[in-house]
Amino acid sequence: MKTVPLHELHQSLGAKIVPFAGFEMPVRYTSDLEEHHTVRQGVGVFDVSHMGEFVLRGPGALELIQRVSANDASLLYDGKVQYSYLPNHQGGVVDDLLVYRSHASEYYLVVNASNIEKDWNWIMSHNTDGVEMENLSDRLCLLAVQGPKALATIQKLTDLDLTNIEYYSFRTGTVAGIDDVIVSATGYTGAGGFELYVKNEKARALWEAIFEAGAEFGIKPVGLGARDTLRLEMGYCLYGNDIDDTTSPLEAGLGWVTKFTKDFVNAEQLKAQKEAGLQRKLVGFEMIDRGIPRSHYTLTDAEGNAIGEVTSGTQSPTLQKGIGMGYVPLAYSKPGTELYVKVRDRLLKAQVVKLPFVK
Image (cartoon, rainbow, N blue to C red; front, top):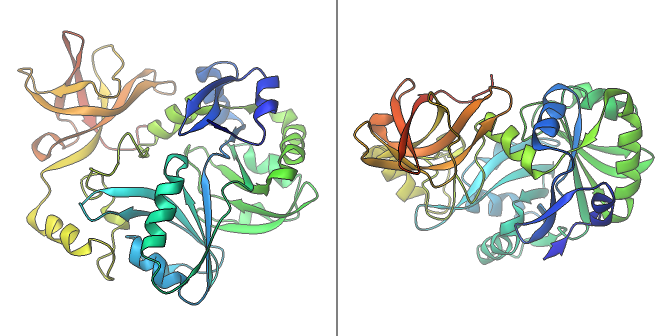
């Protein structure tokens, strides 16, 4: 198991540490519920330094990204970020990722922790033109400062005008006296905020400055437990749960980042699948009966016939009811459709809803 650079700090703060994606990570400091509400209502800080970061440089960098990713990175401009995914040759997803354009011949790719080596090898296998690739994953810390009070907290520490950093954009500047901090607004919580990429040796100083600046807003450290309930309330996919090597990105609702105006890995097969019509779809559902849907629970029709399974599920702290996502046949995908979650030997009624769960 690897550890993040601030591992000892999290231990000293009383975090419960669990294995996640090959790392020992803080899952909670107090309670998932308290940390969830902290982010929805105030400001919280996640250490997500387990994420991977690659740099692609040179005249062929864009062409390589266009080849391996489904979205159209040619639409990016300096300081812009794009959500995308890496399709495989079997109709599934190698990983989902963020593409940052620093300038015309330099891009940052932010990938999931569990897939760092897999993604690196996959992109490298398509790098036929000698694009310079650098893996920064072990050199950078990533702190996600999330919540409605995140802007007021970080603005105290920087001359960057954070109000000018639009959603899915970034700037590089000085934060808390530390140079070359990348500040981006991508977010995985739906609560607003910023992600700060900083060199490992400066991470502790940045963490402490953020907590001093956010003290008046009741800032708290937040673990992976609340991160999962927050992202699920927004209907965001988690790799390994809702999408993986075997799931169709089109069935997962990623058609909006699948651009057939260019050629990319497995584009023809995905295009044929779209034209033939999808057989199933990833949907969100809310529990009508009391109960919490858990990953891998069976989804059924009213007669108890299996029609799918839960990919992600939890008790929503904001809505105070069970919510989940799962793949179902197209006939069961329309909002308002009733389906059932098999919990042990009981069938609990649920209803398909339009995502996100929390508007």
